[in-house]
Image 1 (tube, protein in one colour):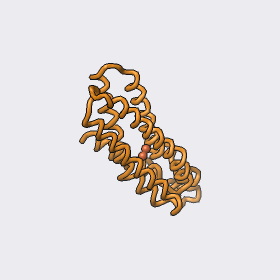
Image 2: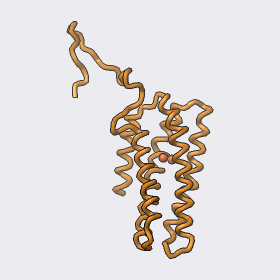
Image 3: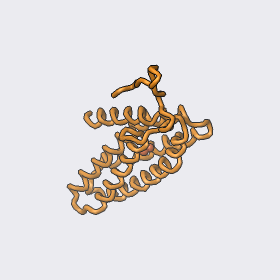
Image 4: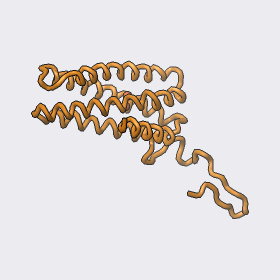
Amino acid sequence: MATTKATPSGKTFKPPIRPAEAGYGSTGESDALRLLKADHDEVATMFEEYEESDDDGEKQEMAQTICAALTVHAEIEEEIFYPAAREVLEAQELELVNEADVEHAAVKELVSQIEASDPTDDHFDATIKVLKEYVKHHVREEESELFPRLEARELDREAVGNALAARKAELLLA
Ligand SMILES: [Fe+2]
Ligand SMILES: [Fe+2]
């Protein structure tokens, strides 16, 4: 991929690091907000599939898959996304990230209860359902409050997206 090209005057033209027409964000595959939204959609589908199942073995497997997906997602957000967001948000907007941290802690608590349990427990389905509601609430806040604010800020969505994708791949292999 060429990063420079000759202008008619013979001078070398160097494009800005962030092309003006593309803003600070990115609309490509590695866009951080798109990547996180894809994770959100994927886990919402998993919850729906869980609810459609009435086989304990299948439910156990699905519950573990949901827990693993949420753990990886929370990890990449806490390690990479939230710190990057904190750097570009205004001071009065940081409370949004603080709330997200607290919500992650609540989600993790439910995930560990589910991981220590199984579908023969009469509270298993209820715990999954509460987890689903918590996640839905948290995702709504991220997508309707945090992401739109970041779209207006100087967040390098592609660089953050690449870092998120790399770390996610690493965690999935672990
Ligand atoms: Fe989150
Ligand atoms: Fe998220």
